[in-house]
Image 1: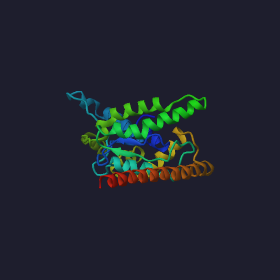
Image 2 (image 1 turned 120 degrees about the vertical axis):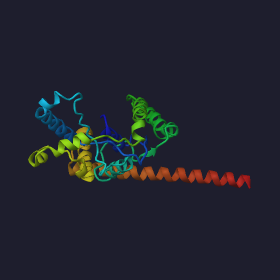
Image 3 (image 1 turned 135 degrees about the horizontal axis):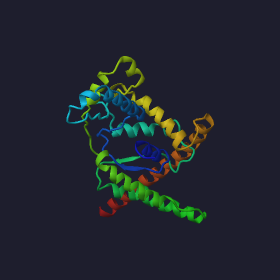
Image 4 (image 1 turned 180 degrees about the vertical axis):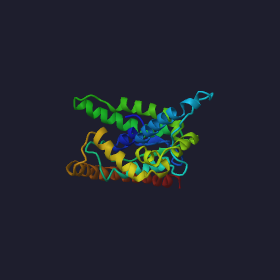
Length: 251
């Protein structure tokens, strides 16, 4: 529940609807199994060069980050995450998944108030009336704190020096490269997202990827989608009518 998948899960549940993100900035995300392979390869390289390292003043640092030739923007990350709302929707959704990306930290509180806080208090009121414990108001406070902490990273592009890591790959044999792959330049992001979104559904949401479960989620998603666009159309119509009435009074 910590990291990019927590965001994917919050969006998929229909809980997270607005975030502080610059869609043009790149996300510093790497597969965890690639991280393990880098750790194993660096341990091997350290053992191989232990005698030489004693003479060096500084130990080598192996920084692992996305390849400059295969970057993923936050906009693409959000778009890929949202695309699975109709493919493998969850059976326990609070609302039809959508997300508003705001790059300004000053506008975020206003958007969060209307898209998070007000709906959260409303649903908590319904839970109290049903004799159940309210959860969303406290949950949104925690979510907003996390979004504020991650703001400097999600609204900026960070560049990492991976010269040592590239040299590590070049020193490995072809057999080892096949066994301990961590080439971010060749990573297929579409295939990666398919794996993590199915994994999120099964291991974080605890919903099996069975046809029955997906069909149940699809049925709920269709109902919430109709409700979502019906309310959205009503609000736009009401706003349009209010502006028309105001213009009529002025003229």
